[in-house]
Image (tube, rainbow over all chains, first blue to last red; front, side, top):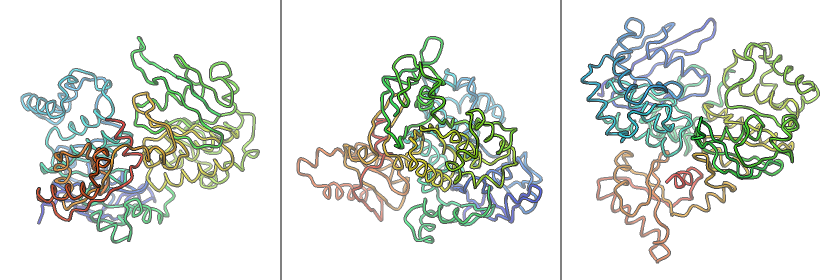
Length: 246
Length: 310
């Protein structure tokens, strides 16, 4: 049995009389790339906020990296990485300064930061950019760097919220190469995307509709289940049935 | 309808950032014309010059025969513009925003209601809600209504579908098709390559330069290499092994398949595509892959973009 790193049971979040996340139950395994899909307003962001220890659930259970979301949110934060399209790095710090800053935040020693930074700069061939402001890097580079920073402290799980939005098709694939490499190292990847070709790169995906998990399986199995050849069509068949008017 | 002639735009104290690099194109009446490219390609700068919000460094452009510099007032009355960032009044309600924009253009919501009816009916249940409290999809619909309320002849939509899920994106494009059928010319920018096929003609753009302008079909047809889609039991191994395959000019992931491009010259010399497929299959089998599936395919716009980026 593979090790379970995220486990939820009837996890629910209500805002007043609105149920944003409605009794979701699922497991994510170690080293898995887990795609978390759904239409805008389906409840993905709210669910992710609960799993990252930023928002308390209304009811239900969840553990992330072995820690309880109600009682141990601070332990969760120490054991995960996070990256989104909107927030990733400080634009007015250099590449090196960002690495030092985030390494420090995650409590790495100066020595570790130095070693990890050198390895990372080497790996991404950023030797000539290390002293440049992040603002001056092309978007594709920023996203690759942001991902590397999100796993800089070698977390158990990394949460990626639309990591490739607006990135060119070539850089988008390079970000995914990094994601594969991280998963090979045993880091669990929890990722949201609106690109259906990227859903294919996940080991398993879940699709949320109206706060519930409407489907969860490997992409190939979902296509079989919905008798279609494209993930786009699976998504369309499910999300079209949404009744929630955002 | 809309023409851009050698447009150049730079930013920075010493004009060191070349955002738009000698761009020329023309858009026909009632056409949906797409600017397709990643963030930072120069799409927004081009739109802002055409909508008279930004002065070009050099070059010229016109909209409906009006010059973007001299006749800026006339252009502002004829075009609708939906910027990439939500720019309506957050603390006015849906209804108030719409009334406001109608009044600014000296018209009324009632006068042009026909044009926005299809879209507005979806917003109507929320008409007393403040714009700032709307969901992303609803904001987008309201912004489109406000851009249409003075019955523009040309509509500029800057990344209207960025961050929007596939179902809402599809609905949005259906709305655009309906507007087109009413004679409105639409310029739309997007980072999603799959939306290219929904445009009549597209310009692929990167680093301020246009890489190619044509119909999506012609751009795909002009793809110079032969392209194959490959599948096997383990994607990550497949990609690694393909990267080492000598007779490939490019290999990359593409949804559930990997794409393999190879120089088409070898086939003119008599080598048949089936022989290439056999060679590739043997190579992959030798490297431990199973359930190998290979088929020749036509290039999509995304394949073309990747080729241009090389």
